[in-house]
Image 1: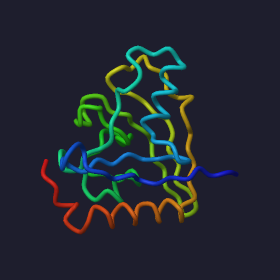
Image 2: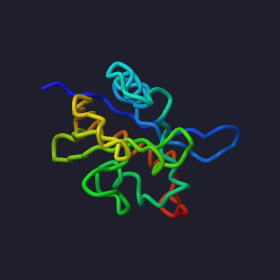
Image 3: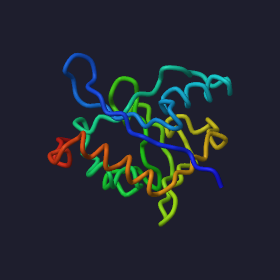
Image 4: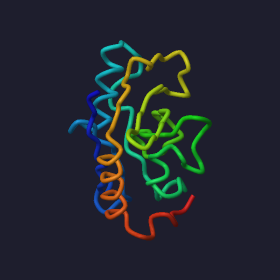
Length: 153
């Protein structure tokens, strides 16, 4: 079974703005992957709708837990993996089921909760080797630093 590769890009938004986290899958930003999918599926609106998650804007809890589907503030059974391009995750989120086992982490059942008629079930699934995934989470935690879990709501 082949695996996708993940890394979490973490950069400041704008000039000295808050940190923004964008997952990259097989080298491509998840924002671009979902844009291509929605445009090809003729969804409206589509393109440039999504942005990364900004931990400073919402208390997700530890990002290592969030990206394992254990965020204390996740909505229902799905976890926000992207937010809106405006910076607010609740405005236009991309949600996914995140399932973690000893060997794999799987992202599937993607959806957009504000447009229930959108069918994103053909997007993904993405399957990651658990060791590589954990390495990517450790790298993200190193960039965010020890105070990242204390961000404001």
